[in-house]
Length: 88
Image (cartoon, rainbow, N blue to C red; front, side):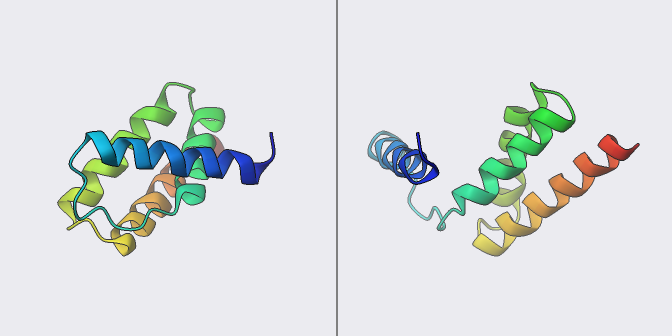
């Protein structure tokens, strides 16, 4: 499967979630940045830490007001912590 096909499927998944869950106010999501961050954590720190980090990112972004900028900063912070652990 190409990256383009995968990202199309991710967009369709988000649409399905929006149809079921009230996601009003959800900012545009840089899904590639999110996936890259979760992949880094899962493969570099601990597999189970990847999805946990995605949950923590969502919580932190919500606490910070839910903006795209908050998402970018939170993901950068998670990558920084992961790289610190990996280089530890």
